[in-house]
View 1 (cartoon, rainbow, N blue to C red):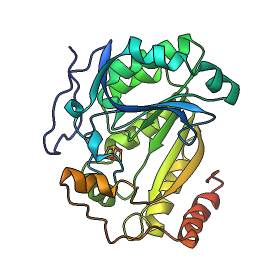
View 2: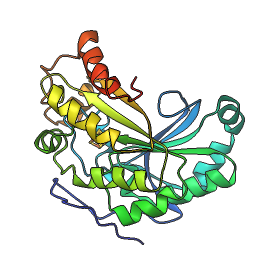
View 3: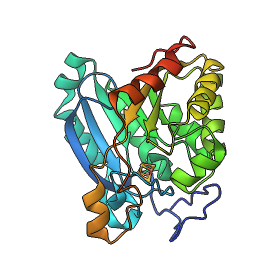
View 4: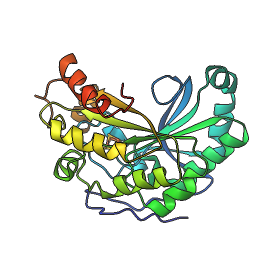
Length: 262
Ligand code: SF4
């Protein structure tokens, strides 16, 4: 059994993770994802997340023990069924969450087995992780989808309940090792849409040579019903989705700095 240290574990009910190299906890899988990396992708949503993002679409992924325990062998058997779709489309396997790096040994083994099968691997992460644990995972990751939920530290903490520092440290490390990375930024009116906040993020990204694109993701409330079902208070219930003009304004800030943003 491996223990994992996370930084600033001040969220409620923080627990040490009982994942292993041969098994871990997942929320669900999807066989034909098309938005979490290139091509058609087999998506694995892990359970367990130390963040508490105000707009989280998967609040049912918070706690590891609410997930389903599965073995790496079971997952790889399932993944193999879709190999032809993935390869023909330039796709692969994406592990998202929850926070996948909450279970680094488990996801490292999945990625390793995928690469042995010639399957492209992508990691969707908040970056809130123990960097040393993450490094071992990244050896088997072809593409990182790094969610930077705000650049202003206070806003980041307001959105997620944790510090931005581990995420920035991971972003800098990904640059150091020249790991292909897509940055994802959720645009939330009245929360993350301050032009100075977006400009700060854009300026930071211009210091990185490994970022292939920025995806501006408009805030939506598709997960709100889950918050209600779980008895959690959804604080963004009165927050509107951003208008197309607001999305365009955010894109313009990135593009004005030569960043490929969509
Ligand atoms: S990192 Fe993702 S899964 Fe975790 S709380 Fe934030 S949005 Fe939800």
